[in-house]
Structures are given as C-alpha cells and as structure tokens.
Image (cartoon, rainbow, N blue to C red; front, side, top):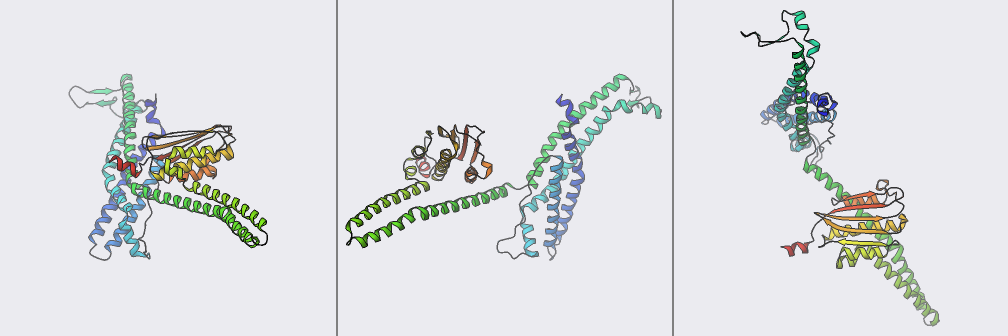
Length: 435
C-alpha cells in the first residue's frame, strides 16, 4: 500500500516540483556563469576584468543562496551557509581587498561549478518528471476525459495505430479504460521512485557544491575546540590560583607570622615559643597536605606512574559513596587522553559525593575499537541535566574539544548513568615499541 500511495505523497510532489524547477533555474545559473565568466575572462587584459569577474562570482554566490533556499523548501534540506568571505590578515579592506578575497574564495568557484554542471542534470530530471507525470496522469484520468473525443471529434475514441491497413486499436470500451488507468498508475509509481532517486542526487549536488566544504567545517570545529580548550585552561588556572591564594598561601603567611612571634619570644618566654613552634609544625603539615591535594587535582603522580586503573581506585577511595572500579585496558592510552579520562571520572565521582544521595556507584573503563569508553553509574536520586549549565555541560565541552562525547541518562528518582567516549590514541612509548 505504501508503494501505491507514493505518487500522491507530499514528498513526491515537492521533489517532483523541485525537479521541474531545475531547468529554468539551471538555465539562469548557466547563462550567468558562462556569459559573465567569459566576458570577464576576455577583459582580464584590462583593469576591469578582475573586478567584473569578482562581481560575477558574487552573483553566483547569491544564486547559490537561492538554490539552498529552494532545496530547504522542497527537499527538506537544512544546509548551513558556507564560510563567509575572508580578507587576508592585515588587509585594510577596500575594493581591491574584496576583489582578491572573492577571487580567492573556494565558495565562489564551487558556486560557479554548480551553475555550470547543474544544467545537464536539470535537463535530464525535468524531462523524466515531465514525461512520467504527463503520461501517468493522462492515463490515470482517462475515464474522466476519453468521452470528449467521440463527442467533439469524428473519432470513436483514442486510436492506436489507426493509420495502418489493419484499422488499429480504438480505446473506447471498459477494458481499454481499465487498462489505461492501471498503466497510468504504474507510470506514476515508477516516476515516484525515479523522483526519489533524482532527489537524492540533487541533495548531493547542493550539499557538495553549495554547502560548507569539509575543510571549512573542520576548521570551524577546530577553532571552536581551541576556544573551548583555552577557556577550560583559563578556568583551571583561576581555580589553581584561588586554591593557592585561599589555602596554602594564606596558611604559609600565617605560619611565617607565627614563627616571627616565636622567634621574638624565644629568649623571653621559651615555653610559649616552643608551643608556637609546635603549632607552626602542625600548620606546615596542613599546608603540605593542601599542596599535595592541589597537585593531585592537576595531575596526580599515581596516574603518571601506574596508569588509569590505580589512579581511579585512589579517587574512588576518597568518595563518600562505596565505588566499584573496573578498568579493562591492555595498554595505556596517550597521556592527554588518559588525563582527560581521569579528570572526567574524578569530576563525576565528586558530583556523586556531593549531589546524588547514592548508596553505591561503579566506574567501568574499557576500550571499544578506537574509542576509550567510560561508564559511571549510581543509584542516587537522579535528575542530572547537562543542559542546565552545570558541571556536566563543562565536561561535555571538554570532551567535545578532543572529538569525545558525553551522554547522560538520569531520570528523576534514579539511577544515573553517564557514558563518556574519548578517541583512543596510543602513547608514544607504545608506538615506538610496536615499531
């Protein structure tokens, strides 16, 4: 039944209309490209050649925008606009800089290529849709109009090969009418399948030549990831500075003042001085512990020396909830990936300690192909939402900066499951050993 309905669906009508509009649109683009580029190329020996070519390319870019809008309306494609025109760094702008940027732009020449290459395909797609729709609908509606032929002409019906000696075949009876309807439906069904296929080709043409290039998309992604990494690094530096200023630094300042007072009382009141030195000794131990905790938060020594399994076990031992740790890795990933994995698991375990109200939790780490997988679950109250600007959103941004993913499943009432993926990269030592 789906096949029988296909010729009458909105998608078929929209894609068929797109194919019919291909020809007039392609003619406009082709004439614009051929005429404009030919004339401007012929005038390159004069000072107006390059500016004229830049103007033609601008028109072709605008034409590409119209084609993207047409594809969005009729093909349901949501194609992002390609990268904007970029001047060279240090350029002061002006007509010359704009002309150079337009001529240098990959988007301009891909728009020109689309205008030149689209015409042959547009002729084919227009012809196919026009033929199948005209023949199919004419035959499908045959019972509605065949009676007009004997009523208004001298012919008894639609004649097939009636000019020959055999007399031909006159379509004027119930059998012929039924056969015409069936044949028309078959033509419309075949045309619907062809329209779907041609729609896929149209989508590839528009996406490949009028959308953002793969290089530009990757460049934007890298720029976004770089900004994320820079922001995260700046936040880490501020956190370290705050911890040093409010913690160890303040304690050491107080310690220096206490030792100064003890020095003054050393000759006058030795017992008080001894008590103050003893208190200062305790402050030194606390300051050292704070510094160790701070260093552990930056990059713990156990992670460097023994790897992810022991490091996560050490973090789990400090969690207020009993945590089961299972790390199934036959080799260690690259240092950067290992550090991000450790940081991610540590932050999630801290969230469990502070907010979950859980009774138990688990950490599982394993390798799946070229991905490092981390799964952390707890039986707490749930309701964690990474879209509310919480720490989970920051973790998601950190992972995205290295092509990682963070997925959170946390219904109200629990349990909560957080899955993190990181790209697997071998560390340098492992690669050297493998070679």
